[in-house]
Length: 483
Image: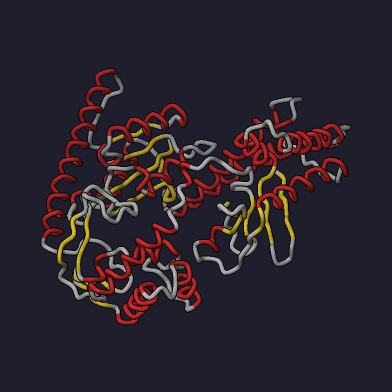
């Protein structure tokens, strides 16, 4: 039996559940129960809460690996069930997925549960207790953070213009100068959000997370009260650009401000005026206006072209200040160019090279079975190599096992080569497949040019046919990649 280990520790203080302690116990359990472990199937999330699975990268990697074929391991070992998940929903969802779709069981090495009907109740009780502990801990932590926020304490990463030293914000002089520059230029209406983002990117200035600036990141800076000496914290979670969230706590901070209140208020007035004259475009409430959405990409930065209210398509990266090359083109012209190319392609019957998929042949299941068997042997060969490297097997045992596998692999490969040779020698003309491809292009073209067909249907159809379209305005070219 092959096994994987999942290890999680949320704080450094949990010495009882330290990664090394958990791994040592898991290895001992595996050895006693005849479970073979591989280093590549040991997954560790350090300093991470178990509340939400999607926020645990090693956990999600383990689940993705478990779903691969052939099955990489038969069992996942954890120190306690609360290491696997502290949310009953996550626990049920992922255990069910592993068991039903992958045939993989999750085993707690310290919570012995028999494989009978009473184990369902016991396991559910353990999961409920873990979730209660997690919820109660989160509530207590939130109380402490709220109290800290009310006293002006800072409790997140340092924003652009500051650095965090001993949990206190200290001004970063060079970055602070750019902050003052942005506030002054915007207050004087000399530069807008996008112009400021382009200016900073041209200078090679990076955001706090090392990314290029864009209009949204500049807007965030203009709405962050940290720059006037205040701190903002929202107990209910992220404010999602709702700068005046009623749940937010804003208190006088313990750090030095970068700008004064007068400049701050002038910028707030300028932002308010901008919103009045150019209201935010709410994509969720606007119906689809073209089947091009998500289809055409900028040749310079690979961002998709987005539709604006003037009837043009423009590079999304350029609109946000991340791309310096404008790829603006009228929506109806771009639609007509693609339609014209589709028509030329199915009418001209351009040359097609068809590579048949092995799985598509129906003469026998033997080819598929042999291929699957060969993959399993390759995995076994890798595992016996790892066992030798980890000093589990001796050199003699490794050589003997490897020789047996190579003989079996050679026999299977000879059978595969014989079957493939027979298939290649068959008289299988590609004409019928070629005609089907031409017909697919023609059908999509007719659907796109039919005014009675809804846009969402056209959108799905063109994405079924085309994988990507790249527009280069400078070269006046349009590259279409068919699926």
